[in-house]
Length: 338
Image 1 (cartoon, rainbow, N blue to C red):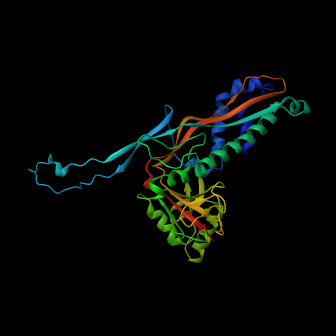
Image 2 (cartoon, rainbow, N blue to C red; image 1 turned 180 degrees about the vertical axis):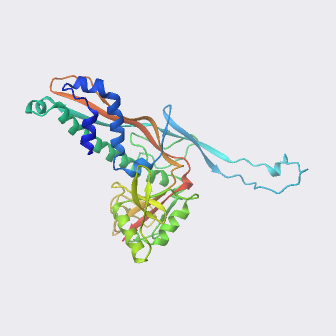
Image 3 (spheres, one colour; image 1 turned 180 degrees about the horizontal axis):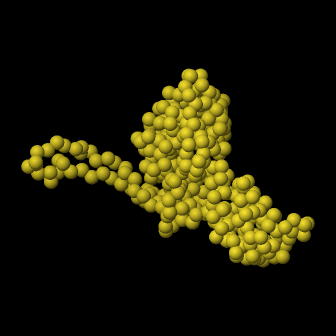
């Protein structure tokens, strides 16, 4: 069943917009939520947890206790200060943001001869695609106005777009979770190697659940595996998708991972060419226990009050934010080239 056919099935057979929305609203919400996941393995496999309040809150450990563990006798007084040390934590808040796609069905199109339901199906289908793309863009490339985290009461986003995985990694501890294909590069990076992918995965303090990259980077990885006479494995992931894997780690692609980043000699990344450096891309290693989506309002669709005879409006929306709870469980490899 195609995406349009699933939308059509969810809608009432009635011809009036009032009947369609009122009678079938619960089913429409469910189908719209499913369609945002449709053919979207990265979204399906990124955990989504319920949130509350105005922000998702978590504590990050900023300093590990300096006093280690000891072998002690059964009579040892462990209340002595030499055995005691406290770790330090900072409260982080990730304020929820609203993603919205608004659609419209005009009276003129209805008058042309097509049924209201057919026109509504077309419009919902197009707006679902827009919603999926913008959400995916924010997840991997979301950029807020914030560049550093310095205050004791931390905020991970500023403005309306939440920070994506790239910015969240960059903001942690002077970008300490990023590596490059070539440090202090004057050319913008160098050719990707399997050794660098292994280094990227080793940068995470726990085994990453996925690698996220562009389609071009995926082709580069496939070529490297073939040249080294290694199997190009596929694994089945949540949602029934079969995706390419590096060893056993799934590779998720996103059209919003840019292939036109510009790695600078100071190891920062520019979005436009600053000199003679060539364009490159990034690959992300992610542990989904620590990077996830917190949802205040799961994706839903609602009709708007009619204010004109010329059209009927609806909105697809969700309140959510991308959370990086432990930055040491993710990493970024920049300067990826063929």
